[in-house]
Amino acid sequence: MAAVEDLLVYALKTASRLGASYAEARFESHLGEALILRNGVVDVSARTVSRGVGVRVLYNRALGFSSTGNLTRRGVSAAVKRAVELAKASSRLLSKGVSMSDETMEKARVTVRPRVRHENVSTEDKVELLKIADGAITKAAEERGVKAVARMFELSLGHVEKHVMNTDGADVYLDKPLSALNCIFTVFGEGRYLQRFVNLGESRGWEAVERWRLDEAMGEEAAAVSEAVKKAVEPPRGKMDVVLGSEIIGLVCHESAGHPGEADRMLGREAAQAGETYITRGHLGSRIGSEVVTIVDDPTLPGSFGYYLYDDEGVKASERVLIERGIIKELLHNRETAPEFGVKSNASSRANNYNREPIVRMANTYMKPGDHSLEELIEGVKEGVYVKSFMEWNIDDKRWNQRYVGVEAYLIRDGELGPMVFQPVIELTTQALYSAIDALGKDLRFYAGYCGKGDPMQGIPVWLGGPSARLRNITLGRVTAQ
Image (cartoon, rainbow, N blue to C red; front, side):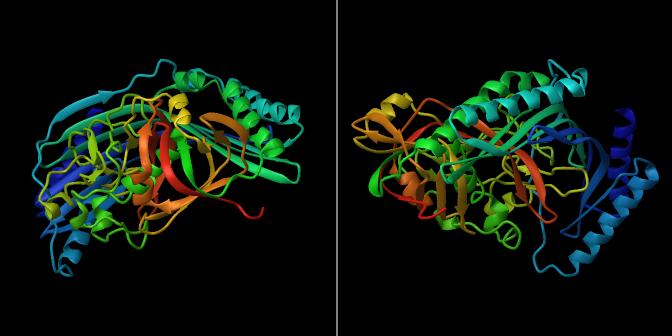
């Protein structure tokens, strides 16, 4: 640790000596293990190591960024010089310069200690766990007279160490484990198919994987998908009430509240990479949904996949309220975007590795739960559909028009679940979706993902979450051909 701290201090002093009005230095170490199982056979077993220092400077109101994997004074000095040279060159082209918001900086050490370290579990045991889960999928399908024709598991286990210092006084350190699982399987039978995606992730050690109970979870998922392939009837069409499961609500929050709420996107800085946003400055404080809809982004949730207490600019994190009781309230800001709106940073600056510049990012985006049970939500529907999970989704460049295709879904008649329905389609605008919600469940759940943004692309760990939600009088469609 001392050697790394010395390098970071040296980077800041060098940047100041070269004329930078502000500088930050960030050390990151990523140790990773990946296991990929395809159709019951190990396809990849790999370990990765990535360590280095990223340096960002402000010179004459222009930002410059550079990085190095050479953890010596010579390597760091060269990175600082490149960052300053880039900032100097940029400053000659800028019509309007960059300013950084004034923030209270702290010194802090945040360590998440795993109960079971990844390295304490043998590779053989990890592979066996995946094979058992894979067998649960094939067994569930076969028992229902269909086949799980394609299956892939990707188990990612990592350890992240990050240390950020800047010339404004920040000195924050994070040490945490990461456990993630992505599973994709396709079930075929009766001349049709369905595909299921399962994504789990936490900032915990092997104990998280144990708690997921993958054999049971994958067996249940495969059983539901197989039943849908075998028995599901065509869904109804037209206006009706719909209950959406927490998985879909979590994705909705991420895609149509989180992404459009990124301040750099509103300023047009992501238009060529990650798209635009329906939110303008004039929309802040305006209604987008019903009063039961409150959506937040909170990096501080213990154990969450997007967990951190200080961002990559050294700002202390807290819950950010994007939509409050149906009103657009807050954007996601870093120290660069905040002055553009006359506000403070809300600690939304993240990079996925030492060689990437920190940009405005989500962490754990979710809808606040209500006080209804799932049964109560369904009981309030005379004729409609309950869509528990999705197979496919699409959203436009501005995050306004969106479409979801269900995979596990059921007809609702007189407040009770009926037969499964095959691939119901929900297609509507963001405002129509949020406005149609009249009641929320108390069954808050989270799902993991790697959110992509930036150029070069940065995939970063996040949680998406929410409760089950009841929507009134929306249009339901169906997939016309497969």
